[in-house]
Image (cartoon, rainbow, N blue to C red; front, side):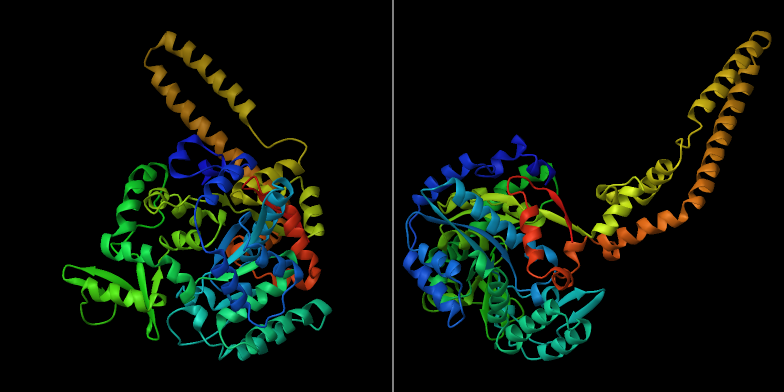
Length: 511
């Protein structure tokens, strides 16, 4: 990921283009040559929103998708309870800002930001909770299968917990209403997620697309058939894995069949067998002809896995770029041969920004102590050394004195050896012991000085614990609601302003 962030030429064989305005112009040309059914896409998106109130910005963007000069930039994530960790929010805002930036530069095209809701995912333990004020609010449910299809039964208990955690302030009351209208007034998890995301980002023109729809999957039918018959993903991705492994760990290894079977009994892997195909956790072997016949009649039962889903997205969307985190970007780098195999242009990969959230008082305290926010990313011993040394007139080091003493020992050794050569070894041993003793003395002096600075060290530890709750970066742990309660909608503006769409950076957001 560091190589990718640095736009290293070594990774060019694994991508289409690195990000730049010139690259987006090329990407538009390439995507323009790919035929897709814009009417089906637009009508289906409107169908998915149903009677939900749309902003004029979102409504206009949906209608623009009918036009041949309209393209999209996409981020994707499975539905998370009340948006889950903060990076869910960051990814979406970066997608919106990228669309805004491109619209300002590419006047002949319309660029629409898309949130691809991964409602077919089935890892419920990843999406059934969120953390707020060091408290974990969890939705207990024994449902299985596609999380977007889950009914919202049981979320009233989470709402009651949220009521206890939040205050009666204007911003907190707004959050309570948002949660209630999303989860208690909608029957399924996917619709509830659409409501929340639309409420937060609709005014910014975000369009939400859910792939778990028959009419959309029908456009992907031929690729699904190739996967079932020819192990499309397995063959194409394995071609890229070996050279990519020279740069780091492979994120996802392909299976023989990279599809799930999705029905009322759950979402289970389709497994290649010597005698045909089987479905994980179910009995019986089916021949390929029967499975292909079912594909023709009920395409919606076939669900792409993590490696095939990108091809599905790019098949139905006029897309230019995908905005993802490090893990996502790593597996997208495996896919160039797969895109080539299905004659699809691979999108530009934008590595998402990260954010550190800190208040002004904490920032002032760090400055007073001679530290910066980036120092909080150091090992504790490193930032403590910097803090202690910054607070003293002189850096605690016996380096100069050690050099002088050991130099004197060398002179003494030289003189003694001229009298008796065997004395050289004696002096060498004493020199090593002397050096070790001086090092230990330096450590003891530093420890004593550290004790004098203990109050200041604890102040920094408290700030670091805020930036790294439970040792995890805020954006991977905390929910947006805590910050929204303090700042309201302005909190989203703060993130938006801090994002750099051209560089994979870490922004410091002062809240």
